[in-house]
Image 1 (cartoon, rainbow, N blue to C red):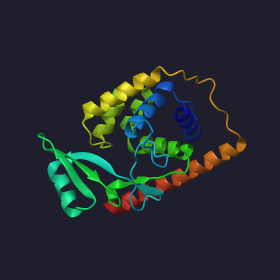
Image 2: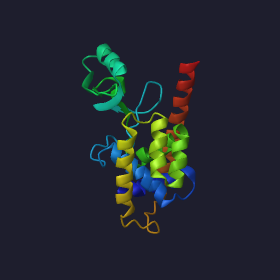
Image 3: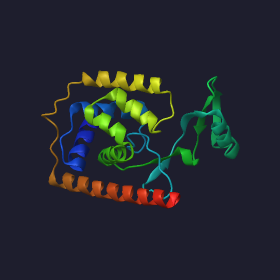
Image 4: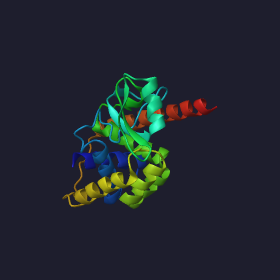
Length: 216
């Protein structure tokens, strides 16, 4: 419920509109799937969003794994043998590889509060993954997963990821969430929220500039 409330408040103040319950359930399901139902949510990073030099975000390091073509995984492991280790090679030409601190692939955005993390999560998705965001707006969990995959958000098998999201979405749909009885923020909380939004937008701008400079 706290996560739902945090996403609701972030959406309301970031977009100045009221979200559909199904839209927030899509986001909750994806965040829960990415973070082991928030047992492994590090520094309020809702979607395991990575950080890189020049993006102007605070960051932290933690171990993570990815599924990728075997040759790519072998290149990573050869280049950084102490922080990139292949754990299994599949018959379909892909391999699971683990990245450990301080490998760049294990660097993730970090936030000081649930509200800050929720604001960045929403802003990141609607800016970087527009097709997936359309699915969120429609409350379509299957197309949300499909669009995230096609846009490169995750490297896992699409069928496994989608099945996981759908299962959690269906489960959360049965929760007794009353959208007519959500928390009311104090003036100080609203001010803090607006400050967080300003900082998030500034960081997004800095990130976009850095990406433009990389490709120039």
